[in-house]
Length: 114
Length: 125
Image (cartoon, rainbow over all chains, first blue to last red; front, side, top):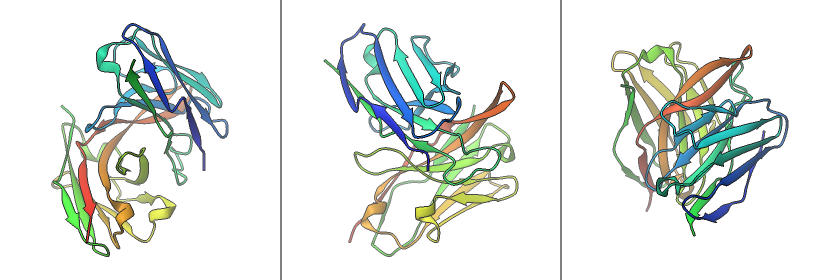
């Protein structure tokens, strides 16, 4: 199975800060990497897909980069509504074969207000 | 607009089974795979399985094979997830999610673009 390791596990930052979260895959996955935001009691929300493509409706302060095994999610200027937990997800074994498991998630990064 | 609406909370005893539903609307039901993902209290996200509403094909996580069954009803655009032989470790919020896809440089990249609101399943004696 492809393992994803996120760092840091938690992060304290202030409104207006630039924040970077990293996700490392246990093997090369090309650009098959997505990022989600989850707030308490809510379902995850897609932010970035295919490593660097911004999902429709997501503010441009969010950006993603990377390929192979190392990926980053950057928030250029933190807003109050950005304090949440962020997850990366790999989809390398999804189409066309859907080898199980086709998707795995990182363990999450909790972004808290300093 | 695309919506996935899940059934309500469940409380089950160890050894019992639970069946959850996920009703899809706002798009062509047979055009998109549906996944189930669960999240134990205070924990991360765990992929459980995938259901193809077009042909009914399924793929399940290895640790859940033998206990997990996904089915669908095209007439009501609803996907069902049944988990049997419940243990305390199955206590979690269960989500259904739609798989979106896009071609990038000749390769298909997939992601979960719409999610249900989640269903709490509590296993308690």
